[in-house]
Image (tube, rainbow, N blue to C red; front, side):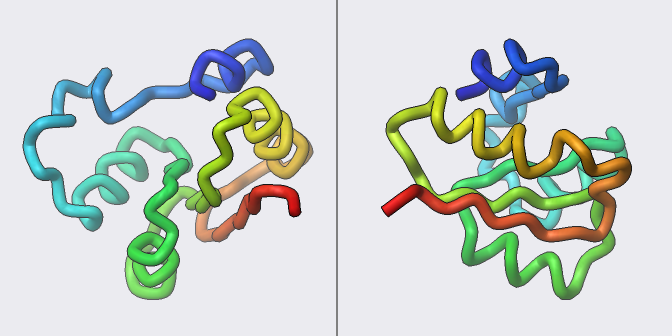
Length: 98
């Protein structure tokens, strides 16, 4: 999915690319890191980050239902956010089609 999002023109940084993937990074810290880097956070951990949306300032959260068709998922994410000038403070939900 990361490659598909990049192919669609999005600047994507994974937790693995930050070097922190194996550090049991608390969700609050992940969200803070993304905000400090002026990035929206894309996650499959919907429950925790939907809760954090209500209690922590952030630069955007995109909470997704897992879809093994990563290209389709990337396209749905792209269509949802491509015309948004600013994602900050917003929670976006991207669900798997029925």
